[in-house]
Length: 332
Ligand code: GDD
Ligand code: MG
Image 1 (cartoon, helix red, strand yellow):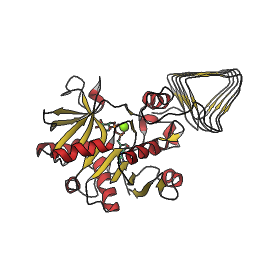
Image 2 (cartoon, protein in one colour; image 1 turned 45 degrees about the vertical axis):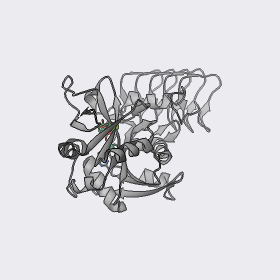
Image 3 (cartoon, helix red, strand yellow; image 1 turned 30 degrees about the vertical axis):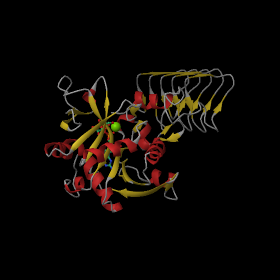
Image 4 (cartoon, protein in one colour; image 1 turned 180 degrees about the horizontal axis):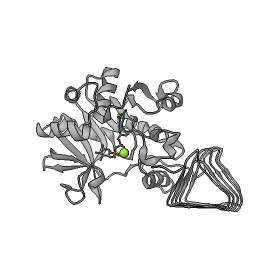
């Protein structure tokens, strides 16, 4: 089976990390999140993936130079301009010549969903589109559905105002589509799958939900990107795990590093305390610095303190400085 993976967004909510690395190429457990996502699609029967690229396509092509990720064959569709989610799906599916039932995935979703089960639900219902659904406490930041007893979706509303959500079941960002979905999407213009295409399929009675209680995180915001990493240490994932320190991480034996991932080529000096954080490849944490609940790609000076903050590759916190609930460089 073939799949389109959406990886062309700007990753705005993860700036300044995404100033230098596109969101789906950011590591989760020392591997690009897109590689973990493609592995999962492969476990569910996907053999070919077309990456719907836009913003910063080069790092993807460089990461998979032979057009393969594990056993999955990769092709690339680079949009001339951002076409939004539906426009990107149509552009990529046409570029790959997709003409049969196919899978679509948002490139920032880390989940234990069994994709084969989603496909089975789709076929059993005779659906035109089937959406993976997850129950959450605060659905307003997501696409939210109202579902009937037979699994058909009665209403799909993208990011409703808090208090107006029709249920707590959200669009978890993995779909199975019939090729007829593509014919609903105007060609070459910006179209949102969530705001335009899904409501039209719902109106025609062709959209179904596949609700599970699998592990699920949209890693596109800082706290959840950090959680997606830390959860790989805690044995919370069914198929996946990670070591705290990547091969090539340089952690001084006199540093105290707790519940933290340290990437290849990152250096943590003596006397530091690092807790609940992700220290990304190439980062440098100076002697006796303290880092808590943060994402660090750049440099933290000696004796500096960082709390719940993000330092991009182009950020440096000077010796003895403090950074709390903030980013370096600043983002607007
Ligand atoms: N190629 C391309 N072109 N990709 C795009 C574009 C575009 O113009 N715009 C967004 N994307 C990609 C992003 O890179 C991401 O992988 C995916 O589309 C979804 O965009 P996000 O920006 O992450 O959307 P979201 O998290 O606010 O909401 C979406 O995901 C939620 C679940 O995580 C929606 O699908 C919601 O309905 C859903 O609940
Ligand atoms: Mg997202």
